[in-house]
Image (cartoon, rainbow, N blue to C red):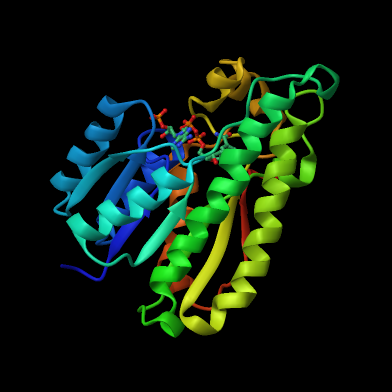
Length: 249
Ligand code: NAP
């Protein structure tokens, strides 16, 4: 058993998958959560194993409390005590103006991006807090600069969910910083992943990349670098930090 057991939610594709690969190189054993795409999750698992670390894949909907609890339990059973968590699973919902948005679409985004992330963070604290007999460890949440831009005409509900992630990250960080747990977030800008196609705009990153001050969309690896820094001791004096990785947007 190692001290470095990491859970990455939404680890099968995009930013989560890049994080799993990079965290493996930092010595983490990894539970790779996914919800639908088993082949992608297993490909990431094989890459982590090829890097010399242990890895499991765990299917589960991170909007569902029972699935979140099962993820933690399976990870502990198969890899050992949890030493870090990346709460990364998130969706934008389809691009829609608010006046045309269904309540169900709003609920789906909030249930995963906010409530699911809160429950995931709570389960991490319950296990890692030194006050509760744990050894401490980092929590990194995946937010978005949408939380400050508001994403008008695209997905205001998504932007609001990430605003909530920022407030939660800062509040929880202050609550548990004295208990060995550093809670921080990355806040990516326009990153070239499948999320845009899922939102209904497959060309979004290519089309809007040129409007970013740096002149292009970012890559999943560029966000994973920031997540892995926040996971590492190099960021040991950071708590409640929202680290923007947005090319200047
Ligand atoms: P992505 O490429 O669409 O990948 C999404 C990942 O989340 C996949 O691994 C997917 O699993 C998983 N997932 C989706 N719904 C889930 C659920 N209900 N339960 C568990 N896992 C679920 O997304 P991404 O661009 O990497 O985004 C990752 C995070 O970064 C999100 O929180 C997103 O809001 C944030 N972000 C992204 C951007 C961007 O421009 N890409 C910008 C700012 C913030 P399956 O493979 O099984 O479907």
